[in-house]
Image 1: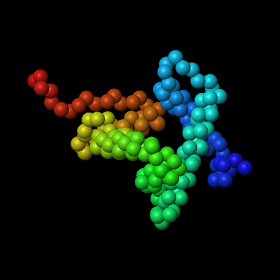
Image 2 (image 1 turned 120 degrees about the vertical axis):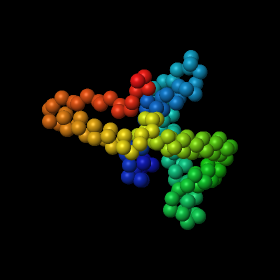
Image 3 (image 1 turned 60 degrees about the vertical axis):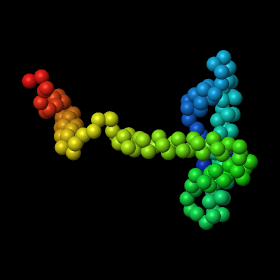
Image 4 (image 1 turned 90 degrees about the vertical axis):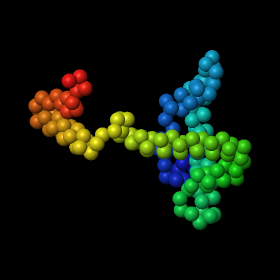
Length: 156
């Protein structure tokens, strides 16, 4: 029985994106080193198995402390239990960096922000303009051109 059959998932369901993994593999190696396709596939399978192993042990650690949600400290403990203690410091540093980047992204307005802040009135006006464009497209009409900013020019 395949390990993935135990949890009811097929191999395709529990894979990693090949393009992303290939990029990571190439970034870790000198530019003159080539990796055979079979070796890339094997590395990807090893990563999936490693994730399964860490996830399973993290779940067991979580259950031992009678929690229902796996937290970062459970993952770090799982690394220690499985004999990967030498990586804990580096993993924790990467986790802290991820938290900082995530916090910065949320402060910038997340994925919907274009970097420029809008007042509520500007946002409502932009929303209305976008609705009008969508209506025009649905009705087969021409799209209304974007209205120029209503702010007065400084060159007056």
